[in-house]
Image (cartoon, rainbow over all chains, first blue to last red; front, side, top):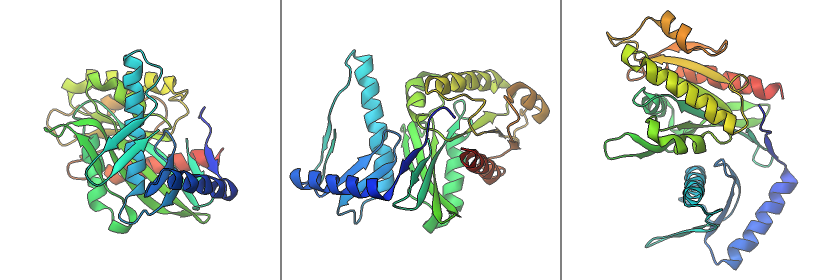
Length: 94
Length: 194
């Protein structure tokens, strides 16, 4: 295949997790995920109890991809942030 | 694009079920979901219209044992089959590791099968992936219908390379796991060669 694989080593994962936790605290968020554009979860910080990270990753990637597609159709380079708000949870997809 | 996570000791692969509208892609995934044990599967997510036609994708994560201490997790996706959802199909193919093409065996759907394969090749090419190299399995679905064409004729018309071919009746589960096993094997063999 022409597309190379993504390999995440222990040291990189620790670094991602540490940065993500700082972001989570700065954003005053309950949980923060680092997800690639194919829908794979790379790292998580915070409380994931009761959440389904695998499904969240797939749906978020789909959401971002669809928004990118919309931006292109509307002649924009990209829509940089997706923000969904609900009664009990807010989701930001930068 | 396989994702190998050394921290979590996981190998994650993406398999996409492709094919024309109403060929049985979602039925395949639904059967796999129904027959897989709770511990080995995640939630089945279906982004469908009110009439249960796939609008964006279906998504099912499953675990299929360990290889050299790594858990193997396969993310199964379907695409919307209707012609006008091409933008969605293209997005879902991003990062694909293996493809199952679900063909509708009925003669009346032959043109739709051929158009869908042409569309698959084009969309893969746009992601820099060649159909010749990607792990690929052909499933001839709806073999139980009286209007189904002979399997040999379908193979001649739809086979792209030396891919494994399976006859199926996805609504009853016939051929569903055989197809899945073949594409998983092909993906793992491909991974081993890299």
